[in-house]
Image (cartoon, rainbow, N blue to C red; front, side):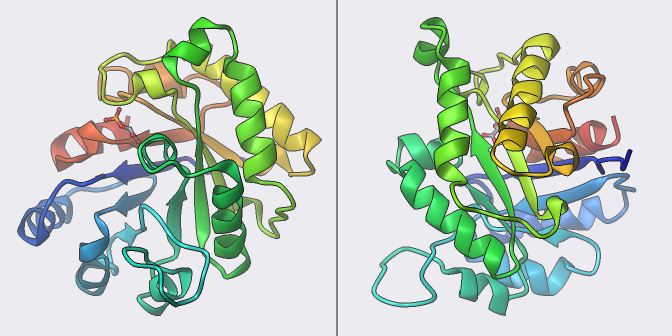
Length: 245
Ligand code: PGA
């Protein structure tokens, strides 16, 4: 069986200015990052970080609109990312879904345009606490995948990564237990299979209060292929302990 290569993402959200980001990468340069790792800084830093650090680090965007250009105030297009040689985009993070009201339909257009234009997509899914308490977590995640990836075909399975991030675990210090996370990851793999993906080759990574202290147990699970890390990715010292767990 072909091994799925481990993948880690640093989701910096709306943190760091240019100076902070440069300090991060300068000290990250002296460390040996053992796995495939992509950094997602805020949008205004993308071009310049890509220019300065792309020899040593992969840089991705936290969001990407599906139109090439036009009157879409505040958005960044897939073409703009490609022009700067940015090849990764996070799509459907729960903060985009919940705060900015991005629907499955919109996310599907974004993911589809990214993938068909050569951007690799980290597609995020996950239930809220209320949904979990009602026992609806599997139904919610299934719908997010079915509707968010509707009609999408990937030529290369490594171009699509699913990030399972239970909303109640993001930034709260509460992590899903490795067993609960594994149950959901195995379920996601089954749903991907049922929807025509080569699911055994698609990486499914976990996000939600991933820390140096909990990464080892999470990574012991057979269906967890890496992590999407927020808070603990803001400092090289903590993020490297996660990546090189
Ligand atoms: P967290 O964020 O690691 O701070 O919980 C993860 C994410 O939102 O991607």
